[in-house]
Image (cartoon, rainbow, N blue to C red; front, side, top):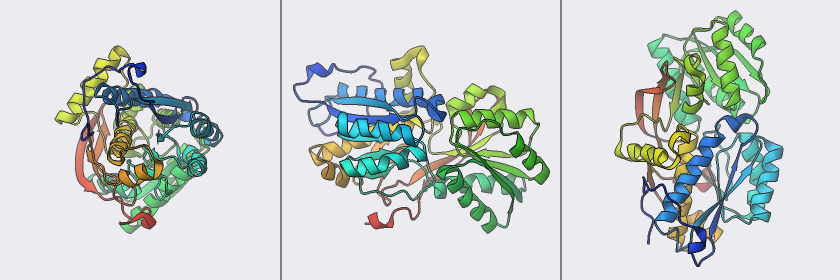
Length: 383
């Protein structure tokens, strides 16, 4: 059997003991605690659904997939423990990870030492390169332009204020944003950061008010910081065009009216009206019922990542790490986001959607941009 496309709607998982062969172990380091704990349940569901569907079709090279989930604490120290456990104790065959940049950076040396294929599925600040890593989510070159251009054209914004979490993702995204804003003739009138676990944005909001910008763009660590920042902005009466690089649909829904009007750019929005996405949404509902989490820009790439790993193992004919790494740039996953192939310097061209959060927390698609190239990310891996 060759795995050529996703199979949706099969909310069952075959018993591992039904297979004569040993399982293929996929490690899932994820922030069950810390900043990402808000979105972690959707990550776990996405992983469980993908594995259930693949196992229901006979597994991969005649072997079932088995998940090994580890809490990375949403940060560096927890990630070191999680990766060490997955690589050297659980001896996983591959890793599919939606994590903060701090967690990824802490885990990469362990991945490199253990020579384990890693598919990183979180949007990030770009230019993280390793012989053992592929990325199927967006980078600044794919995400910044739609939001900045919308604010400049729709709202005649010229003065921007930037707020971020004080770590690589926050600073990297906003550095790119500053450069892009200035290249378009705009100015950045303020740029402020709070520690990754910070929750009191009062002083920064005061700075924003004093700067009197036309628009606001934020780049936090996601999850809890998005909730605290957005609620405090609303309480302070801030009512200017607001773009958020790290908000997901599940978090937006949990915030209710506080998130209304926030702009985001994503490679997946749950309202996409395509056959593949409709089938995916039904599969989530069938498997998890009333406990189903809202799928979003963080969970769906992880779902796709498991399918990409499975397809690479099929193509390689084994779980031998070097063979799987070679195959990952050649396989295409057809899923809720469309066709995804990580053949652009270990990254992927992505169709991007500019979205706006509605009053009920759902996201309305404002514009779409087909096959946006990630640009120069890891030239040492260029064909």
